[in-house]
Length: 286
Length: 141
Image (tube, rainbow over all chains, first blue to last red; front, top):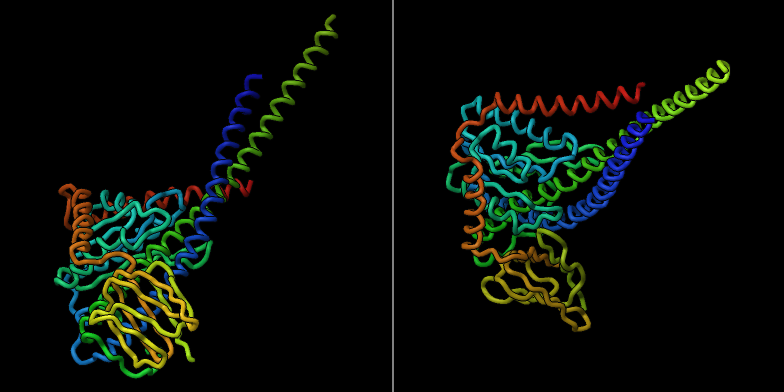
């Protein structure tokens, strides 16, 4: 039964694949949970700094800080937050499509674009398609640290301060839930005016040494916390997307195994039937 | 004796959250001690220790490398930097990020080639779609 053996080998190898995809699914699930926890841990800082930033910027409404001032866009900076690894469904592809859409919108207005790339997938993509990349960072792992991102943040923010770019945008994945992640574009600089929120009128602060340097510091940290948030969120998105992708490949492997098993049984049955009829035919001839 | 609520948070996680009788922090202009009902204050921090004194007099000590101290009458927030953020260090990290970008591009710069990029994406999308269709077909059969 040569055919039977071939099919059996195929079944065995498909089972091995299924084992791997199942393991990857479970790993992604647990990593996703941890990534979500980290997202939650980073939230208090981001919220606090946002409140403080909007508070001071309101108190200092006299002269506008460059980070708050809208200027004509001649060049824009775009930070693209992608994952380091693949096998996560359409996550990165969707993100790049959104990025290109954005890029072509600006190019039509004859605006220069400078990219800051996070994650090896975006690097691979831009290596192919070109584009002016001024900073990049990759291999952040499952647990990105702020220290790894400082370089990129500094390059992008300084480019804005020097006037090399007039807007700073970020393309990131928004974690809606396990099943869906959407690419979205946020403007980091100039900081969009906050919607009037219910602010505690705690009275004005005493600033030490002065309001201005404190404001500089706070706004910078605010931008950085937003970028950091995008990166941690992207890890959660990546894991969720991988979990779903691996789940469907495990399911597919199961279906393939079922089909092969059926084919194997049929072949076996056919071989037995043939043998019997040969014996019967032989006996009749005698 | 009244207490004041203290939050110490870094960009990565929440470090301390609780009540205290008094908080000491290394403000830029010199160390400050904050007691309940302090006037609203906002100041940058130097590298140093943040000490949180509980009502029973025990102290907890946290090391910060900089950051921001925000004081409101009932709440003290320390927005801590957990890593050394000297200008030179930032610049060094920035150079590294730039160099990597330059190494990657190897000459090819300027406008992004939209046509090529689109083609690239269409291909990737087609692959995804095919996977989906194959899956649907198999379900259907």
